[in-house]
Image (cartoon, rainbow, N blue to C red; front, side, top):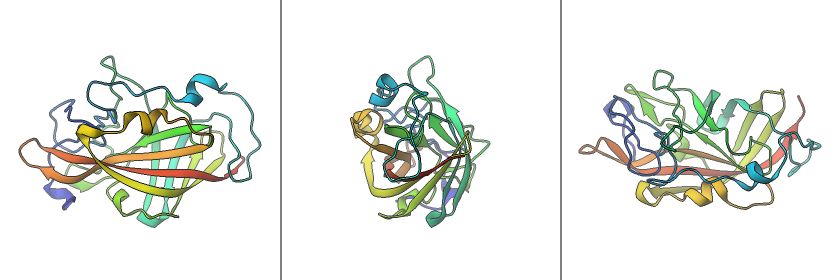
Length: 221
């Protein structure tokens, strides 16, 4: 498992084993952010491909879907997270952009997928540590089933999710299709970071930690 953040100086090639650059600090989930499997681009979600970004939904009840609106902040009381959320696109090589290591408490939403509250899997990535200090998802591994995640969106609305399960996987076996493109009939949020042992030879974590959560309520802005 992870050790004290000050011991970390490597980087977390997202969900795979790519190091995207050799700077100090540790990245998230494949993150390199490329929380995608080695050599792959994140897959298009069914929502991104098949649902109009502006299609209305009536928020307020569990499982109601929300219209598209980028997330701006994230709060997880159970593990002490209160963080801004940036937008992440794809780099020319097909890997996901990364939040700057200079802002350890910044999470990043993969903007080519659904926004939190829309139909399908929305993905938010975050560092586990950086520059010898704990980062936004340092305690992601401590989440438990039933913990709440609140995402405030640009339109002022709030999507509340409940954690269903956690998964730790080897970077070489990152479940790209399941995380980014699973065909589901509800709104899901996936949080991704690094985890497991830190390999002092490669300067990377061996695993990724993924939290899967489901929308339980939505309030209008």
